[in-house]
Image: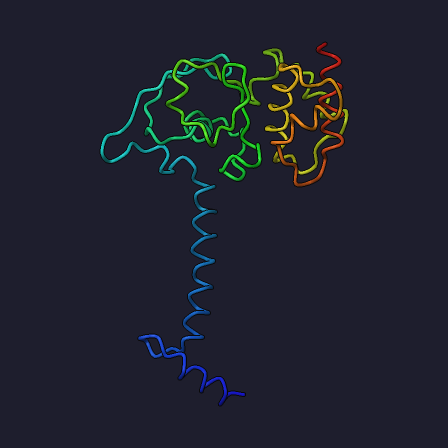
Length: 215
């Protein structure tokens, strides 16, 4: 077997260091996993130092004035900064989650001027003078939970909780838009929000409960 592997290595060629092509590829693959995982873990732990917060080297930045959860903010950001990164990294509002970062999971759903948007796909500079509501802004100033937040608790509509902020914000939008006439309608209008734990039945029940209370 060792002679056969040696013959294959000779046919495949060798890396410049003298290591067999098989060994070179194995080492490279392992290094690639480490290179992908470790920086990602480091970036999550040090979000404040991410590239999204730094002005572009060519000076393409803008001063943005925006109201988030009733509080006015003025920040200077790189024009490429997403609304998601603005909220999490500039305004210290980590309740809005970064899931797929491609608009496919709904974990980053927030309300912009009352409408549901995927914050990961929305450029922050497009929100000049906008009114934005995140999960942190739903409860009353006195601490009373929003009807849908309370319904999620009563219906046990979450497990790991990672998608929950986006589910709740989307559910609030769904209720305000009037798309709660039936469970089927709620499912259709909440279909952009993925729950990998599979709590869909209870999520629909929570939205329906809050809709009845608000109605």
